[in-house]
Image 1 (tube, rainbow, N blue to C red):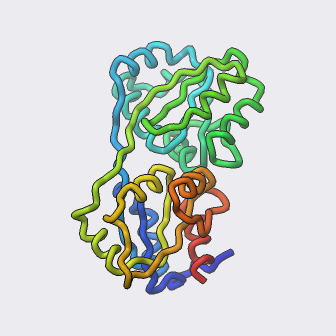
Image 2: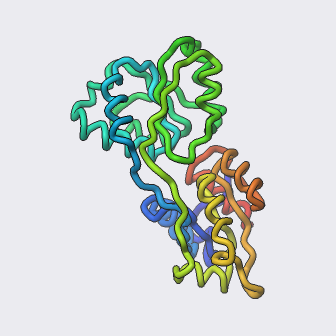
Amino acid sequence: MADTTKGALEGRRIVVTRTRDKASELAAKLSGLGAKVIELPVIRISKEVSNQALADVMLELGGYDWLVFTSGSGVHFFFEEFFRVLDDIRALGLIRIACVGETTAKAVGALHLKVECLPKTATAEGLAGEMIDTGSMDNAKVLVITGNLNRDVLVTRLEGARAIVDCLQVYKTEGVDLSSDPAAADFRRRGADAVLFASSSSAQCFVDQGDTLRIGGGGTKPIHGSIGPQTSETMRRVGLSVDFEAPTPGIDPLIAELVRALK
């Protein structure tokens, strides 16, 4: 295990690219290890749901066999609308719940709901494989809660296993213009020791910033850290090096790998 005791990141400049509302826990843990945290929230996540699609799903909710979440944001915004419309958790009936990773599963668990399917590898491919391995996909009705940038691989693989899949988009992810952000100006001038990426969209939107996040000649060139394989895949695709990756997706494993990499 890497040394994650107090002072393990003393004096290090670490960039966090998560949305402002999701960065607090990660930033607090990094600060507790002595790091100087630079927040560059390159993405924004907000609720976006079609009232008609929502009404159709809520009317048919009792007919679904599986409810699938691919992110904590999906859990948050789905249940915000669920309780607005139905106001009783028992309306879920006997539906089984699947989640792509531990963080998403914790969001479901906070509602005192059981997650019955959680893959060892937190990717859409891993989740699809785990669900198919339950032997329950043939003619099963599956509701996948999505955002605007979700990949099609989960739906495609479940449909290939003869499941009947509906998708409900409840949020959107979009880039944030940081050109006038003082933290971005500081990053351009001084650089950083490391930049952390906790999602594919943050990697893509970081690169999309172009000159806004391009470090000048005198700045420290950072190493890049990924929270998991799906994010790493996107980082490589958009031209970012993957200098370290959390062995299992999550904040604590990511920080442990950061400490190890900087040593």
